Length: 350
Image 1 (cartoon, helix red, strand yellow):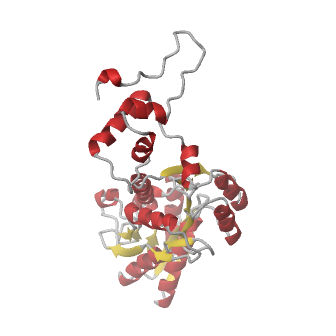
Image 2 (cartoon, one colour; image 1 turned 60 degrees about the vertical axis):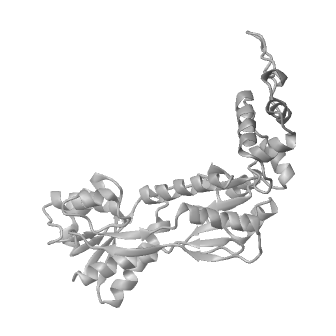
Image 3 (cartoon, one colour; image 1 turned 90 degrees about the vertical axis):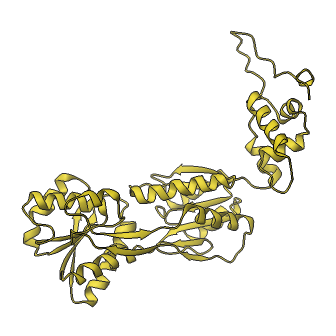
């Protein structure tokens, strides 16, 4: 098609005019690209069922970019009967590098499947309040990380609002939702088993004082207690905040606690505590063995190198495919997927 036969761009208002420029439409894109509006819709909505040549796809995308056209999400949703929004409530607690990397990978994978990921800050909202706020956006799927406890009633509210899939991540499932179970007890069990194997009988388990981390710390403590108790070892919960001052205070009273090992919740808390032990004159591992969790790179750079529990997380692509399947084939039959495995990694600190 010759350049002269193309329609001009929508007119630009004169300098100083307060009139906003006209919003480009799919019809403008179709005229500029020399194709039908249906072809524009197929290309820009990534319709896989219609075969369109790559040169045509390229022309449509170039025309849309030249005009500054973007598809209208609401109109697209009306045509499809649902949105492409996957709502991901923003975690209200510090989740660490391991989980942050996993969530980033999940969002990229969902975008590749043509979903729009919306992070929603639900800080200060109760379960019912949060769910009503989520439902207003009419998401096609909701992935709850467990920072807000959902009920069967909450799941039903989301589904009445159009959510084809509600996915929960955490230690237990919720009726009506697909459960992605990540059993944190396994982390504590593996840490305690490793320490017991190394001959430690009096284990301090760090319980973070930061609000919200009990979702992870409580089951890790329970897992450690179960394993240590079966072996005749003692477990003592020891509160500690994520600060040098709190770590130093705990290290200063460690000898009086009579403990010979520490499972420090994760690698970050373990590194703080191990430094505090050394400042207090406690030798690691001779006086106190230390193990963390998450297997962060920096733990291998410490001296002594930090023993840890390596957590095997699902890939973002795997979870995104589960979400996509649940959206495309919604069912009253919900599924449980056990997604996390853990193993102790022995290094010098134990």
